Image (tube, rainbow over all chains, first blue to last red; front, side, top):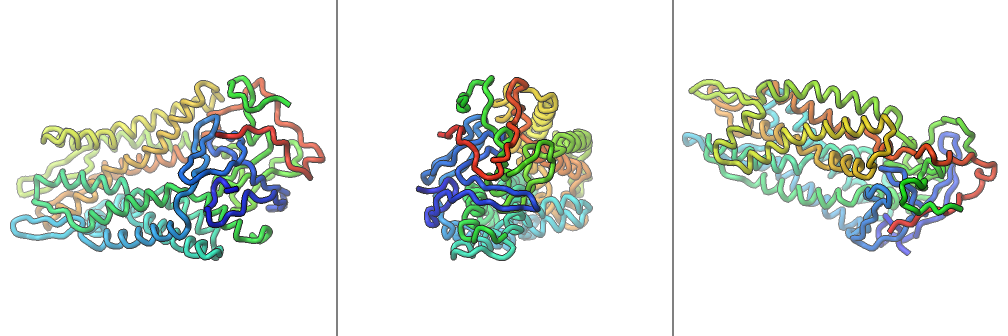
Length: 233
Length: 243
């Protein structure tokens, strides 16, 4: 029997209810239940086939997905995303020519210019959502998955996973990708532009990050507690 | 035992609140509090990830209203102030959000104008309107069309970050069109206000607790009082299977 949100390789079933005391309050876990995040309806946990999607019977919210990619596969996606993120930021996004002058524009360059010409807060916002959060998301995923794929739980796992949730919410690579296309068209009247390596790297990064974040984080938590003895934090 | 699987709106649904179960929003683990005394408000934490567990996020509506109000106030300068100025030997020109869309339209890029219009004008207004609707009905504990309102909530969550499009476009144009001190594109104060609107509406929808869209029916029985035996065993399984 395969658990709802676990990897096919580490098949430990739903597990037994475990009693524990957290901050002095006694609790018992209910591994055979799922509670909907969006409407609080309680469901019985059932095994999901890869690709199968479970939705709440009351509000239709996503409850879980049967996983298609193993931790090792996800690690490969994350490493690929890191490579394309680095290329996308070091290589020029567009090159333009004006009166024989050739300029290559990289993403950090555009953000730095925005800072210098008087909108440092906008520059910070763009840097955070198009660069810092995506980078942190990829690095944290690699860190956690390197250990999980070897059957170990890394140090600082809780902190890394909470940070990962935050970074996923504020990472906007796909929006940035579309705005690059809009910016290209809007500047076409002013200068002759050619798309460059950085833009293609961001396009691939968009695809990789989308497939990476689609699986959610619950399965990684589940895997960590399958790997860890019940009473260690 | 009553059949809790019925989907009729008059029948109580098995909820975490009624069964004393907490679903963890961070890691998905379901826990049940043992030996709870009625009126005991001690904070429960997830045994796996230590996230505080609640049946409703505390102060969800206050925070949603505060972020929404701030976003609504900043929406005016975001649309009235120039989001960028272009400088050339011919002079300086200011562009507002709507002005930029008009230029695209007049230049014949109507599909691009449509994309920017949707991302910059339609999405922020719709988001604000939907959040006001959701928070307003949730405040009145309305049980009106909960499913449709839940779908609206998910729509807001899904499209919210696309409004950031124009912020990125201007930042990239600043980088692309920059030819020393004489000519180039400069970001304007409207862009800061617009960026703030986007972030504030994202915070508003993230603060909203969608469980408020499903208030308990006044006719529904109150949560069962915990019996002493609740300290030991695992609760009954009168719970619907999901397909």
